[in-house]
Image (tube, rainbow, N blue to C red):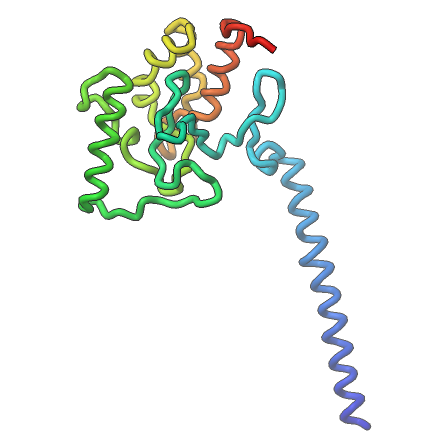
Length: 209
């Protein structure tokens, strides 16, 4: 009987601790973290969602949005992100996993360089490194200011906007301050393209219903 009583006492202690741990770590802690995040950083906590000109959620600033069709051709109206080993699919984020001397990587870089040079009407030597190499996630929305400026003429012409207007948008979406100091200046393509779309909206021909 004494042994049974001891077992029951231990079981009761274990159950009480399980209940406490469940409430504290499974309910109270997640709710506290959620509440603090919503209070001090709601934009980041909710996925860094960017809204379009109509005020509707359009995309996450953390994920590149590609305009490539099934054949891989990019829409000339938009700034293009870095190449992606997963075709910019968030469900399968990954890098190419090719080594720096892998023939497949060198072949892909050469093909990307030729494609970018042809699309932008520049010499292949003018194409920056981030325009031809995929990011580690395959979803990186940031490109170098050099790559953004390389695409400026094409985007300007395709949208019927002035060069100064689009250049100003690029400048507005180029990181600076502490972010650039700790890393390097970059341009968020997803946010930039939404800004270009908003700027081009008045000049777009009316769609028939």
